[in-house]
Length: 224
Image 1 (cartoon, rainbow, N blue to C red):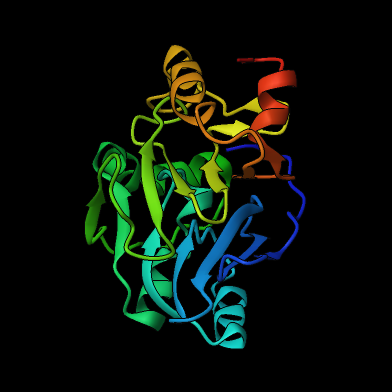
Image 2 (image 1 turned 45 degrees about the horizontal axis):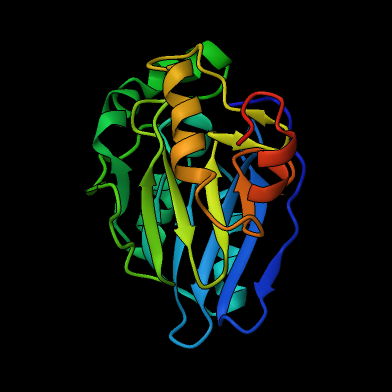
């Protein structure tokens, strides 16, 4: 969770057949991503933090069928539209089990940040480390630290990482909120994220994207 935001580049990864669209949504401008298979038209929605109509409009425009709604973590700004997207698509909501407690205190989170509260349905399924997301070759990387259940999503063929609020351009996610752990986030970045390809694109939870190689060289919080 961070206040800084700007729109990441939208792209279709050349030669991979994977569609990637990322754009800010919701009251805190979380980066939501739609990642789809150009051939099968199956897609996942990552971190629908608000503006459900905007998300569904792009899904319709792209001609995609959503098979899963996945969350990097359960801070309010990454989950607020999950129920609306589930109702519109019928796709199940996925979350790491260790962030269920955050999902359960959504009303408290909203009150803390002055955001209108809207109840959400419970997650349908729990994410596991190294789990296949069942779309576009995506794999779950459990990267705790920002929250206990923080997870990143790695798409090898597109060399694209959805890092949520774990890694930012030149920065890392805050660890002063519920369940945050500074040592854990540094370990997650060094051991899980920095082991990926240097030229991999990183879609951050807020603000501009980056690359693994750039962060390994210049991130002032954690370098390789």
